[in-house]
Length: 161
Image (cartoon, rainbow, N blue to C red; front, side, top):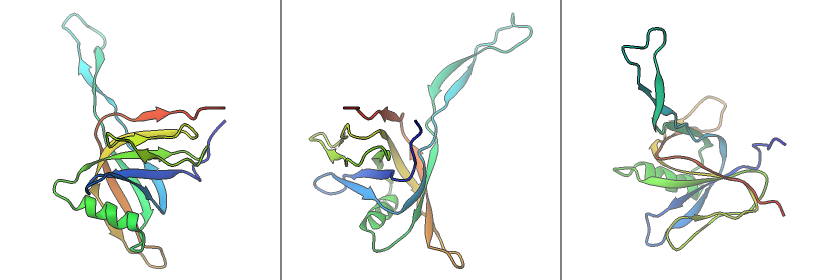
C-alpha cells in the first residue's frame, strides 16, 4: 500500500555543541533527498562494431532540496541557517520519518541516529549548500534549502508487530 507524504517528519543531528542533539525541522513543505546515480564507465573496444559497451562505476551523490515556510520563531530554522553559514558547512546526519508511524529518533553514544522500528526511515548525510529566502507578494516567506549528499541513502522499513 502507498504511504502518504502528509505526516512525514524531518530530523537532523546538530553536533555543533558539546553534546549532539536531534533537531526536528518544522514547517517543511517538500523534500527531495537527491539521487546518487552510478558513473558510466566506457569499456568499448575496437572490436565493438555496433554499440558502445558500459559498466557501472562509483555512485555520485547529487543535490537534494527542501522547501520550508521560513519562520524566525522556529528554533530549528535558526539552527539550520546558522549551520549553513559555517565555513565549511558541516555535513549533517539526516533522518526522514515516514507517515506510517510517529516515533522520534534519539542520538546514540556514537553520535548517530537511533531510529525506532515503529516507522519507516530514510537516512543519509548531506551538508546545506544554500539557504536563500524568498519574499513574494501575498505569500509566506519561504526558503528552498539546497542539500549536497555525501554517500548513500539507507531505507529502513517499519517493523510489523
